[in-house]
Image (cartoon, rainbow over all chains, first blue to last red; front, side, top):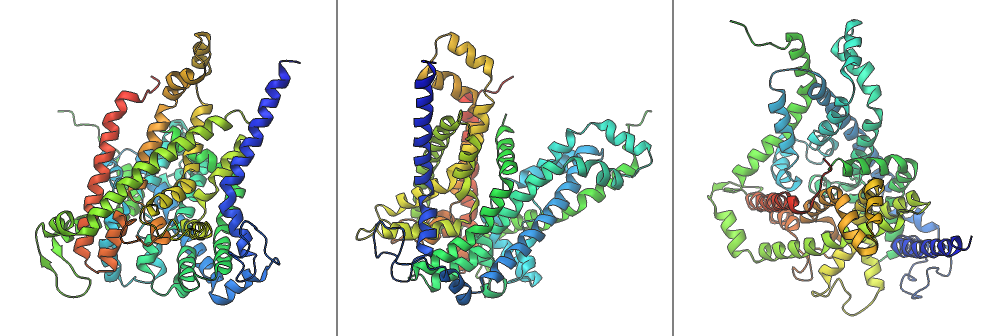
Amino acid sequence: MRAESPRRAGRVVSHVLLAAVALTFLYPLIFAVATALKPPGETFGSPGSLVGSELRWRNFADVFAYVPFERYIGNGVLVAGAGTLVVLAASALSAYAFAALRWRGRDGIFLVFLATMMVPQEVLVVPMFLLMQAFGWVDSYQALIFPWAFTAFGAFLLRQFFKSVPGELREAARLDGAGEVRVFLRVMLPLARPALGVLAVFTFIGYWNSFLWPLIMINDVNARGTVPLGLQLFFGQNGNQWHLVMAASVISILPTLLLLVALQKHLVKGIATAGLAGR
Amino acid sequence: MKRPVKPRTTEQWSALGFVTPSVLGLGLFTLFPVGMAVVMSFFQWPMLGTREFVGLDNFRYLLGEDPDFLSALRNTFVFTGLYVPLNILLALGLAFWIHRSRWANLWRVLFFVPAITPMVANAVIWKLLFQALGGAPNVLADGRTALLAVVAMSVWQGFGYNMIVFSAAVNEMSPSVLEAASLDGATGLRRLVSVQLPLISPALFFAATMTMINALQVFTQPYILTAGGPGNATETLVMNVYQAGFESRDLGLAAAGAWLLFAIILGVTAVQFVGQKRWVHYES
């Protein structure tokens, strides 16, 4: 008993300190929410105080009156949703061919796939811009969705997963008369659900937060802008109205925060797996 | 003569069917642009108007005459040199700290929050934060502190990801090795340096490499916080590429700048891979 209590005290102190660190860490976000609820002109009014003379929830409604934030969110869902579907479909199909089928050219093509992962986005954006011009896709949803939907990363991730599925499962299905498409849809895809889920979440977030490419591609932000573009536009136009800028920032943050709360276990596991894959 | 075993033709055909979407997509949206970027970097290629072959002039200009590119190069290196170690140290320290906490998962998720929220929003919030901090000029407007402020905001935003990576590695440390070490009397710092860190060195290597590659491509944080200023104190390589291509509208120059950045990334990554033999221990 005696040995227990100093250890327990140590644990309590450690947790109190940890909570203090976490609170300090989250201060910028707390500060953003607090400022978003202050009346105009009070942002710098009472230094150190997080609360203004009233809690002004109207600020959030005002943001929507200034710019069509609902439109940015809708665009974001459309672009990220469609992009994620394309990424999942293309990655899963090619991963199956790489993992489960024997065919001429397989290893060579897979090597080319891996090599493309090294190319940074910046090398691609300039010629991609010309490509989009040639397609007539400048300022369109397609331009936000397709250019980045064919990544080798997804194929690589799912290939690793498909390879871990015992070959006997596939052989059995084939002996039952199932064709490759059926084996893929009925046997492999259901087994790959966890890996597909991780890939889907990270792809969706990547699209949702993407900034450089939409900045280059989208001219009419109010029509086809995503959330980061809309926020940047709003910030540029109302930069001195900090209570509204913070309200807009909080609105931009909320969807990703909800996603994190809903899927935290999968996200943590997905990142951990990616990191441990280094072994 | 015996013929080599040929794959069944049906399997060959269905494989082609499965890979075709990806092959076409990667060819059109990655391989073709890469080839085009090579060609463009040798041209003066205005967004409007006629283009002209100029050989290596774009590279010569960037490395010799363009004052902005060289300072962007310097800023990017300073940013990376500060950001990567700070990020790794914080992530590592917290991963060990929360290791035995009953609420380890809660802490992981909390510190991960800004890594998942939009970078533009994070940067806008920090811009106000720095403004509220006061000072005349404030830290973002002062050439001596602006880049440090960008680093601070970026570390806050990014280390949560690595913390999860390290935290998983710490949890996987082999109990038998740890026990053997404690029987040998290794405690405290010695245990950390000569037992625990080697055990998680593969994760450290992975995180250091990925974090460095990302750091060299930093764009959104300085773009929102400082727009590269004051002067060009916080202009980074990607900002330079963006400005050359889409503000000055000289696409050839932008392509050349992007290639130089790619070369730097490849070089730094290669050095890391060569260097890993000295300090990364893989369980055999």
